Amino acid sequence: MKRLLNLIFCSLLLLPALRAQEEAKFRIVPCGRVLIDGALYASPQKYLFKDGLAIPEARVGAKMWYGKWSSWIDVGFAYGKIGLRNMWIQYDFNSSNSLRVGNFLQPFGLQSPVTANNKPTFEQPLASALFTPGLQLGVMYTFQNPSIYSATSFHTESSALTNVMNYPLFNQQGYTLLTRFAWRHKNNGNPGSLILQGGISLGFSSPDRNLVDNEDIHDGFTNSANFPTKVTTLTAVSAVVSNARNRFKLSPELLLAYRRLALESQYFFQSISRKSGFHNYGAQGAYVTLRGMILGGDYSYDKGIAVLANPKKNALELVADYNYAKLSDSKAGIFGGRANSCSLTLNYYFNPYVTARLNYSYTHVWDREGYAPESMNAFQLRLMVIF
Image (cartoon, rainbow, N blue to C red; front, side, top):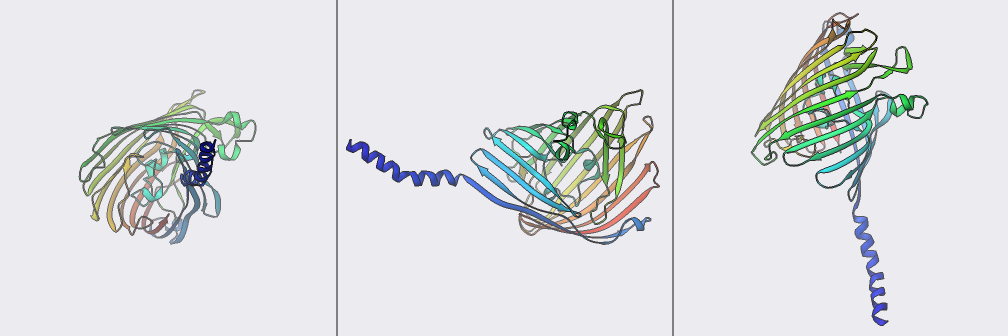
């Protein structure tokens, strides 16, 4: 009996320590970002592009970790509007398998898993902005090992966050099934080694709400992208496809890096099947990005999301990018426009939290119904604080 009492007493003494150990597993940190941009424009349509300064985005939120669970929620302020951005919960079964539910970046190619702070170009390539879904409400399963990365997601249309409780739209929301598969060299990430990755992304979607005619009819798709600048927001190319049955898209990707040089490339193809005798619609685009480290170490690899990692403190990087997009299809009678764009960006990484970007970009759009050809030369500067 005495031994039992001693055991109980010792157990009671250990409870605070055990509780402290349990609580130590829980971790929460604040997060946020502020982007401050300045731009000067030269264009034949100068009246469309106004020089100036802007804060295109500010976010504040928190990240949480507890054992195998993690979560992220943040609220963003952009152009006078406040809205939820990341809002997800994730469970890691082990180091290779995870499941995520909520509002998050959907998997579709090299640009898809990273936010603005990790994209090497000043703005996301126009072709990628057209065909990559960005933040959407859904669920995603991820599997990875040293040689393979794969992610499969199911998400609803963009209006789900605002109309999810409005009957009958709850049962009529469009959906998208996406998958990204990448093979990578098992030595990716080893200092000084060749980084090699090839992959393909596939997507299938049912139509979204037809915002032009009737919000209760789901028979349309919209592709749209702005000129690659945020001081002035102006649509570059845009196509609305009605009488749609479904959409299929694919995108092969390539990542190649060795020491201080890197190449990233992606091609996009999209086909929309249509009903009522309307001709099917096709669109495509591609970009090529060349990266070089002027100051700093070699490029490294982020195996968790299968992309190049952000350069280290005091790194200076030069990035050249070219991309092309075609939203006009004469057989379908839809002329959403064509775009050529090239840019040169100098990135300086003061530390993991502060980055400065200096950019020149040229964009030319044409073949858009109801619009004359337009061109933009932009000289831009961005200071980005991310924590």
